[in-house]
Amino acid sequence: MSTIPFDVRNIRWNTIEGFDHIAYHVCAVDETKRIVDILFKFDANARIALHRHKADYITLVLQGELRIYGANGKLKEIRPVGSYVAGKADGEPHAEGGGDQDVIAFFSNRNVDNLVYVTLPP
Image (tube, rainbow, N blue to C red):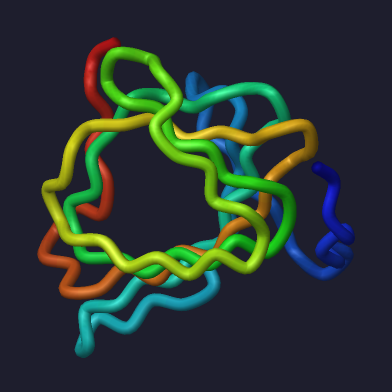
């Protein structure tokens, strides 16, 4: 299901070589409060590398639907636009991706100790 496009004209997207189907924009880093806020753009009908969150987080889906895949590759959850979810560090390994349109989601990572995410072998 398509949603109203999120206006990204003033966002500078960054990519990391070797990490397909994702772009990011760091909104803010507060070292004192240990918070890292990031916008992610996940490609439609694709998924990113298997990973684990190393910090507590809050997610808000701004465009599209965020799909969550288990370590076995099976679809576990679909978060529609407007979904607000809080999660704990060191949860189950998973991959994320978009539905039929690119997904834009805001992640507020809390209690960051050192790493925010760690990628895992497929």
